[in-house]
Structure formats: structure tokens, C-alpha cells
Image (cartoon, rainbow, N blue to C red; front, side, top):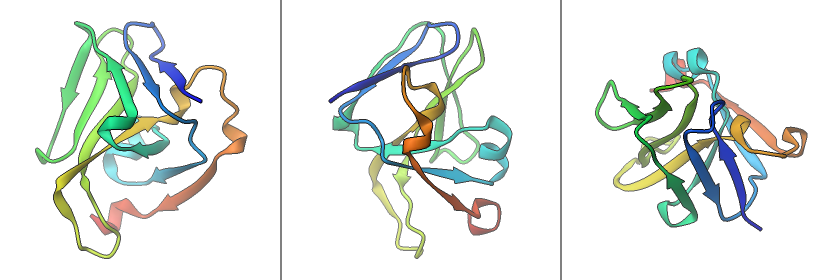
Length: 121
């Protein structure tokens, strides 16, 4: 069952092939300030309908954070397949959607894992 999400103003939309069952809350400098709650998918599992409002922020060049220029919502991010054990696959891409933007979705059904990205990355 696919599920969709939008930014606050509706300028950006995305659809994933299945509702998330788990998500990651990271305390790195970016995630803690943007307030995202991330569920990860492969590029084949997500369709993003971009618009002129799509903007990208990147500090490292690896992680690309897409946000809406109109309302400022952090929509999704693309990144390499980072690994908690340090065996990163920089060629394999994953997409993290901001679960908080899913429409008609009960966040209480998602298991949240908190990671210490502030000290890990």
C-alpha cells in the first residue's frame, strides 16, 4: 500500500511504496535543527513530484537535503548508504523521507530509533 506526503504549503509531494514501520531520530547538527524523523527507502521505492520550490542544501556534498522554498519544510534527503559500523557504501544511495509529512498517517505506529549522529559522524 503506497502512502503520500506533502510539505506544509503543498508545493512538493512524494509517494512511497509502503508505509514506514520504523524511523530514525538523529541528533546531528542538521537533523536536530530541522526536526526531521527519517524513514529510509531505495530510489526505486519513492516518487517525488518536484516543483520550482525544490531547493537543496548540502554541507558535505554527500548528503543532499531537499526542502520547500515556499514553506521551508524539510521533505527528504539523499545520501550514501551510511553504516553504523563504519563500512559505508558511498556508491549506493538511499532516500530518507520526513515521516512527519506523511498525510493521514499515525506516527504512533512507527518504532523510532534514536542515534547519536552528533558524535558518530
